[in-house]
Length: 248
Image (cartoon, rainbow, N blue to C red; front, side, top):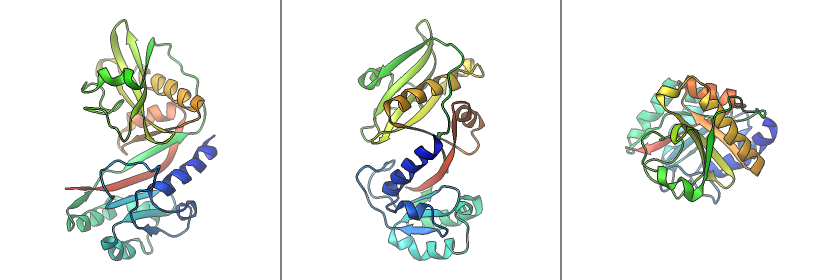
């Protein structure tokens, strides 16, 4: 399962980073120029200034040409995954500040490696597309759906909520960040955590997405152990790490 999704990932990242699948699997790091290719994931408006990704080997850096000289020196004789260590990110951040940008936190991304049958038996409700609209702006669910309002570039497609009567205990949702690429987010209310609700909802939603033929993927921060455990419990494994520059 993971291998099939990993092949689809190579095609998607090639669009996102204006490169080829071979660039992503090369021994050496690669630098490319920014491009807005049709079908790419987009998390910031306008032309990207810098985005960097690794599958664990080399790194591909898509960056404004003004950064290329600095980047060539930085990536020379440096393993791609080490570019994401704090020392190298600080060097990169210092260079970005010269142009009015700063480095975003790293995003640790997961793909399914096996199908998991949900365990827990919580009562759930499903919501699709426009049915999700009443939940926008609810501060309890900033990860499950777009907050505070819908995002036309990455529309929310499906939400599954664990409920007790009319009370929502937790909510998992997916946004279509690129055609047929559904990113999953999860929020469980604090008083209902450690009951398995997060893993149950993410597993349900993951299976639904796979049945549709789409790609479910999951992202979290390096130190968010709870979120990573939900990913593992739901059949995901680490697939890539990425970061980007944001305007100050």
